[in-house]
Length: 95
Length: 337
Ligand SMILES: [Fe+2]
Ligand SMILES: [Fe+2]
Ligand SMILES: [Fe+2]
Image (cartoon, rainbow over all chains, first blue to last red; front, side, top):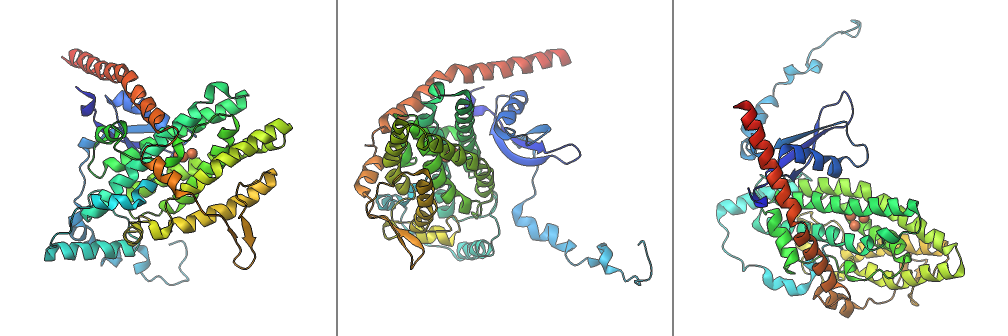
């Protein structure tokens, strides 16, 4: 494997205990272990995280931006999925 | 700024000649501009005009190169910092600049160029980087002046880039700006220590200000009437303010800081205009700027040579990493088998 073939890893960091990992950026590395080492130096120099995920970019399946409308628009007119759609008299408590 | 080479008129020739735009393409372009106008972020896999992609690749990669080459003038002083406190600060700053380069190369790669291609352009001398890093750092006061003025000018330019229409670039700039403010503060603090020190230390601080003032103003790029790509980049929301606007903001912010230091800005024409509320300043010597962009600055050759040496000397590390990864994979396979 030449350096040119070092895979791209997407880096996710959990900012603190109890929160989800969040995408912060990407980097190339010879393997996942080195990706983690490098991610520590590049993305957590100021206590930004307590846990790192390095995910090979090639393993991520992504939705197609041109299908945005057909995928997400159907949810727009379904107001009945939200709690505010339902009328409850003000006198009823704890609901 | 870090990408001031983009604005040079001479580069207009690099633009491909206009071709016929199909109806479908015109519709896509219209839709694209609507999204940009609505302040929506453009993401890597979204449709974008070829010119937008090309401009971003050049701007982001020039910016990345500037961060990496920018490590050199300051790196020069790490081993000679006068105290441990100053040394750890400088080390952390230079390390940050390396990180900034990486965030930016990563952002450029989302546009379909490879890292090796970009690094190759820098090492071959084909790519441009900010003119400011072609000046030498002969004294310790230069480290203060760079943090205060160069990082200060960088912040002035980069804060609006956090709202750039291209998502990955904007997000990289958010991280970078968060880190830059420490760079400027440590520089100013260093200048303050010198300015309040012995007469000799104060002279050193003044000398550094004398040498870095005008180059810092040039960081914002040619004045608006000389700038080639401004209008299109504004429409695409890659750029939010003109070079002259940002330069004026920098002067307005920096002059009072120099006064606090008890140092004199090397511009006899500098004066405050109470009517406009802005400082007026003397004409910039653009011949010096253009010479540096052409590669004839005091340190152009040295900087590229240093980058080449780093690349060559680091070859064994890259090879070892590759070999190590292969070995680790082999071991894992053997264990599984
Ligand atoms: Fe930086
Ligand atoms: Fe910088
Ligand atoms: Fe900086």
